[in-house]
Every structure is written in C-alpha cells, then in structure tokens.
Length: 274
Image 1 (tube, rainbow, N blue to C red):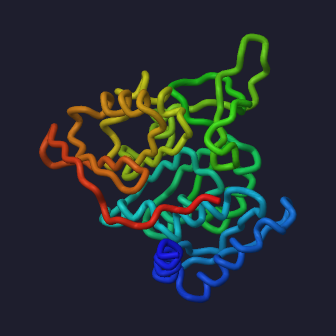
Image 2: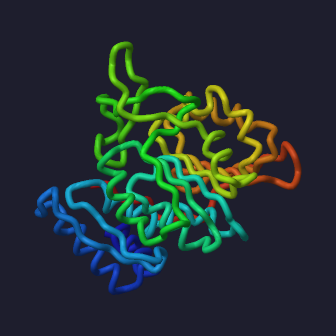
C-alpha cells in the first residue's frame, strides 16, 4: 500500500492530477480492452498527445518515462542539439527529449514493425525535428531479422534482433552509430540513449572507437555481466563520469580526463510491472 501511495504521489507531481487519474484509469482497464484498441495519454513533459496501444507494454513504457522520469538524469544538460535514440520503441523517450530540449533534433531507431508504426504516429507532430529509421543499431552493416528467442517478458518493449542465418532472407537493416553521426550533419552527439535489449554486446564489441569520443552524454541500460564488462572497457579512460539512475548507467563528459565517479542519482520508485 505504501508503495502505491508513493507511486500515485510521483504521478501527480510529474503528470498533474487530472492526467494521473486518466493514467490510473487506463491501467485499471487495460486487461479488458481488445488488443487492437488504443487510447491517448497527455503529459506536460511531451508537447503532443501520445498514442498508447491496449494490451501492449506501451503503458508501462509511459510509466517509466513520464511518471517515474527515468531520464531525469539528463535534465541538467544545458544545450542538447543532436540526440540519438537507439531502441526508441514507440517514441516516448524521443518525445521526452524533444520537449525538454527545444533546440534538439532526434534520430530515433526502432526495428520492430509494430513499435515503429506507433513511433511514427507519436512523433509525426514534431515534423522536421525527427528522423525515424526502421532498422537496428549494430556494430556494422549486415542483414538482420526479429529474433524468435524470448527476451525479458517477451512483450513489445523487449523485442530483439539477430543476424540472418545463411540462406535466410534478412528483413531488417543494421546501422552503426558512426554512420548515424556522419549522416546527421552534426559533429558531435549531445545525448546518445541506448536501450537495445542486449544488442549493446554487439555495439561495444567492435567498431566503436571512431565515434565514442564524439558523444558528450551517454545513457544506457545494460543487460547482463558481459554487456557491462564490454561497455565499461569501451568507455574507460575517455573522460566520462559514471553514475547510476534507476536501471540506467549514465556517462557524462568530465572536465578531467580519466576521472570517473560512481554515485546514485535521486531515488524514485521503479515501475511496478504487472
């Protein structure tokens, strides 16, 4: 009960009273809605209303980003220009960034077809500030497919990709972060967000040295010990200060090279998964 009271209090603070009521109502009735139903949620932290698909993980993603504000760790960045959102899901994190950083442009990458269609709908009002790509971030160019292996709870926020096997027709293109930067027209990345359900193991296994120093702020959700080891080896000695914010590892350029610190950023209740 205490947890639920705290969650409601956090929701009211971050959404407002009326929108919290709407959010909680949708959570209560989501199990009785048909899977192809959808509804709209509004938050002061997104300039435009957001579509939410019933029977999917969308409502939980909304809770993470707008109720518990898992990207609050980036709010103190003074002037973000280019933001790359790897694993953009249905566009909620991109909408948060576009709203909080009004001078920014966001490149968002999402491989899953259903998620991508919802992303296009949610980010369409931001017009030329968004470049959306239906592909997957990888360490190089190759052919990929949506993986049939279960990852996490197997819902829409846990889609994974794998390389196409010999003789298998690829359905998804891969793109590396260096290419995204080169094609952006920007010299540096203000914010690189990575939440790719384990593919960070591939991203930080090779072909990262030509772009990693062009990233000023990096926020990543790491999945497993191997991913953590590869990632920390890749950023070691590159002038990042390292902190934790809920499930995220946050790396910000430090004024002193090789200086690293580990701390815990502001506690907020983590989302209660059904």
